[in-house]
Image 1 (cartoon, protein in one colour):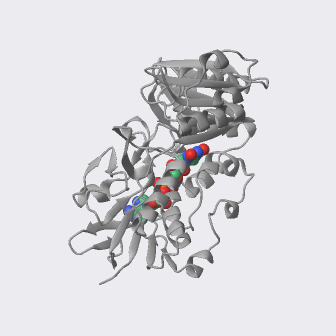
Image 2 (cartoon, protein in one colour):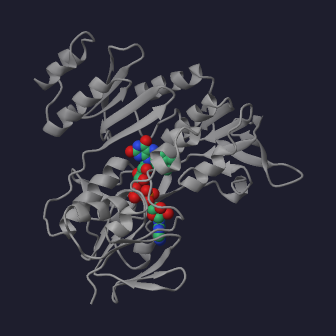
Length: 407
Ligand SMILES: Cc1cc2nc3c(=O)[nH]c(=O)nc-3n(C[C@H](O)[C@H](O)[C@H](O)COP(=O)(O)OP(=O)(O)OC[C@H]3O[C@@H](n4cnc5c(N)ncnc54)[C@H](O)[C@@H]3O)c2cc1C
């Protein structure tokens, strides 16, 4: 009988889980199985500094390659787990090899949604951004004067737009919904980010969907896009940023409970007590609801909480969501989770162009978006952690020091 922990997925959460167990002096054998060819690395720079060419891959990795043998963590790269046999407690890889586990952790992340072939999604020159390979392919396309169409006005699309403009490309971004950031942020945040992008020359077309992509007559490369308003634009390449889906097929196939992701409890346990799920692929309980978070904060904190449970602890994971996005010289920082908000309050910051948007649900403060406003972010985050409600008089006075909110 083995006491091995097998982690499926060598990304942010998979690495954090292994590293935390070793930090807790837990010496059980650990194997991380990852389908990518490279050692674990952080993804956020893939749509920011790495795509810009301002960051080497070595700076993306969590630890150097030597860390794994030094810490007795076996790393199986270029290896895809095909199947989980829960009865035999074994996973089967794509080459037929099998690995026994005592404990299994699913850290499989998520996959970008793609466009169907019927609208040209299979043409050459159509990209998504999820891993190093995607970013490397895309970086090769980012040349001055080329025409880029970005489909989807979420964070990935907007970050890619900022990189492309910085590198001198012509950028059109289309968003099917009424406005950019519709799913994730308030109108005030969207208005501010739209204005920033427009001032940098991005053409943003909201309420505009894609009808179809058109390939070149001589080959299979995208050359134009027909939009839902009947117009056609010429393009050299396309980035599709229309959200991600959790990688929960393995869990579903072996009969674990799956919703929008692998269903886990507050200890990151799935419906099988010897199997955990962490990071983007997990659907976790939060304030009486079930949510899925796609962020570094959640991947790390939930994985570390799971590690503590695996090592014998009993503290539940209490997600304290935070997120950031870098676009041009703008840092957007978000604390809390704005789901279900029914009121927002925008407050100009001390610096020119800085702004914070405070979210409320049923009168209670639930989240803040801070645009180049670190003070608002830090204050809001602290208030959420300690349960302090903001004093509206202080919030509505732009001259007031936000520190007073914590008094
Ligand atoms: C371009 C980009 C920019 C981002 N920017 C930000 C940001 O600014 N701030 C922020 O908070 N978050 C950001 N994120 C999100 C953040 O990176 C993710 O939430 C985080 O990586 C999730 O960690 P994870 O371990 O769950 O998944 P991942 O890091 O995606 O790792 C999952 C790994 O599992 C592998 N895998 C899947 N199935 C199998 C299998 N069956 N067998 C073997 N291996 C498998 C995958 O190949 C992948 O390597 C960004 C993400 C991307 C893609």
